[in-house]
Image 1 (tube, rainbow, N blue to C red):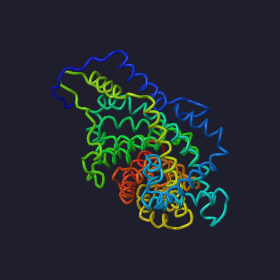
Image 2: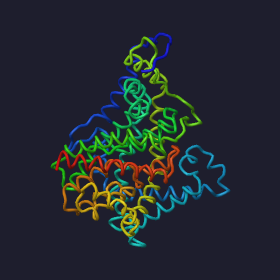
Image 3: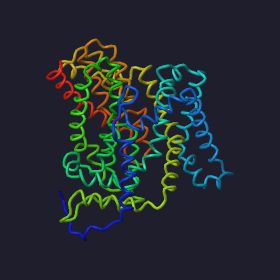
Image 4: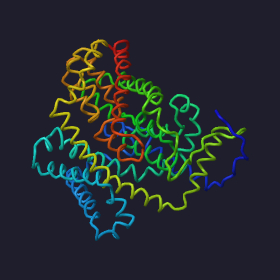
Length: 456
């Protein structure tokens, strides 16, 4: 590990140490420690999210439709000349003063939600495989997960945990993945909880000056891994849950290999090594000469935690993040996700795009290659679609490979893609599609080889 000469490590009081350890420990317990609850493996955050969702499930679609309508109308109204003073208010500007392109998408999202809630207009918009999937299946999950994730994420970000872990594991993350050590927390938060939580962590870290443009793009597209809970759902849907250990082992091995390769090839390798301009570089993981990694990690963590002067301010920031997600992101998820599902379900676009995969699948001796090929590409629209296509395939080996790919492709527009496009991380939809194809092409032979050699 690279070391620098520096002055001796500072001395802090017990209270200052507790300010780091206590909130960080709570954050670890909520975000990173797996627990078995109600027959499934989840995390503390997941228990709260699932409990709230179960309690108010019947009201969420109507409530979120109202949020989407207010978001669209508010964004249109603040454009009126007579309201130029009103939109200067920080809260109004944050929630409603957006560029025309986003106003249009918010309006489309609101219209799709209304059409789905009341089942009016073209059926392809509100059908059980398009709008209803978004409004009744995906958006309720996002609503409650983002609520608790935004409220409790400061426990991971503000009190030194990222700085501590980053210093400890830097010597692994840098050579393997060309990333700072703190990116391991993003991966763990995704793995134990939700890929969207991982992306949310990444965007906040980038906008706070802890990742360069390249690092943020790499972490968001390679480390937002599917949670254990969702992986089990996929395995059950594909009727391969009896092989879940082998299945998830293949997902992990494939995901690690892809994460080593993808950051080293364009377009990710060509991203600039510069930090988000409004804040500049805020990270320091280099360890001084004569100081252990652990001691320096604690030093940087306590220093970070000591910068928090008001718990009320941290809580307020969390609430603002919740409102920003609900009013700004979820309308885009409804709009883009529904459009993606319409294309996937009612047009042959993904079937045509999948034709090049047929000979590759046949070369890899994957049975029912013709039927499996669309599953290779349709995951760009939504992570669950490959499993929907694969569930009708007779070959268990083919279903196994499709399931692995659906979890290692990572980038899907109905959720992760929208989050990235909406964020300030400099990556376009076209670049996301290229990375998606790269991940698919790299993952496929690895998954097929492991399936043939180890399990079938």
